[in-house]
Image (cartoon, rainbow, N blue to C red; front, side, top):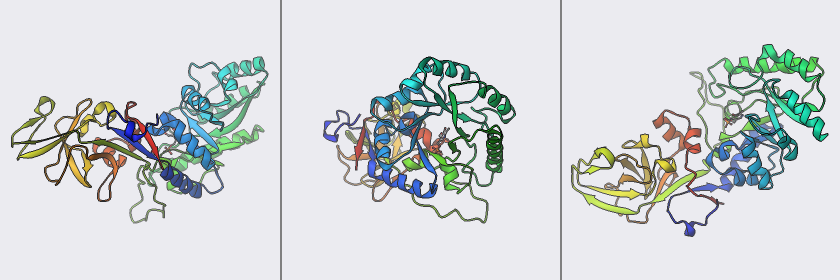
Length: 383
Ligand SMILES: Cc1ncc(COP(=O)(O)O)c(C=O)c1O
């Protein structure tokens, strides 16, 4: 949904900067070197709007897009995206004929659906290409190394299906102290060698996610699969003591979450605020009401803890955040008026609140904070 700002009926919105997205893409490209680029735009491009992000990154030259489901892929095809699409999650209950009809590439983690794909390919007289996922240690999806030989044996008895990619997903890429990434890399190398001895040379090999790219890890791969960095959202690297962080470009947050002051009141000390009297003023206070709540993705656990930016200064969220409304203590910020802009995530010249700041308060990852921005919040695309 791209609504001009003067047409907003409720003054709560998200601004997505396409120029920052392009700049982040270029930074990722430089780190990736000669490797091709799969932009991960699942979960509505981490809350940024998959169609707009795909259009923008297609213009930058993204080679592939990674999505979680057929539904996500079909939204992109309906919007005219022609780049190859990898279904990272699998096909689930979808009709395999959709793979052919919409030119989608499934990832496969077992032989369970291989026969169905081969049958579908025979019926439509068109090959079905897939990327094989190996589980090198994350333990979610992927053929375990000890079942790879059986998978390949079965695959080689079938016609119409083509293994064109091999990939795996890392569990601890951003932790430069953990040995898990090297172990995963070794298992991936072994899987590639096993394919090679079976006479299979996949056109695409891909392992790196944002953490791996930032940590300058090296894998036998010709493509990277990047989400977070494109959106300017990084999970911080854990670096061994005494070692410096690798020299890294600055990735800029692409998304700003905004609302407005819609009501202002001066209240005496000891005034209860919000459901369940979750806050009592401790001094005469100026309280601003903002039309944003947990249904918009402002997590209720930020009640009495989180902040927003008003007139370049941090104002504390007071009282319990409700479904559609929340309250800010603006007593210390001179000159606040009804209609003033409120930044819930983003930066003004003097202050900033990042998805990572919020995630650390909530004991989660910044991706979750971005993904949970509500569907009803319009996304406005700006240059
Ligand atoms: C299979 C897979 N590949 C790549 C990515 C991209 O990871 P990141 O956003 O950390 O770059 C994800 C994200 O969760 C993923 O699930």
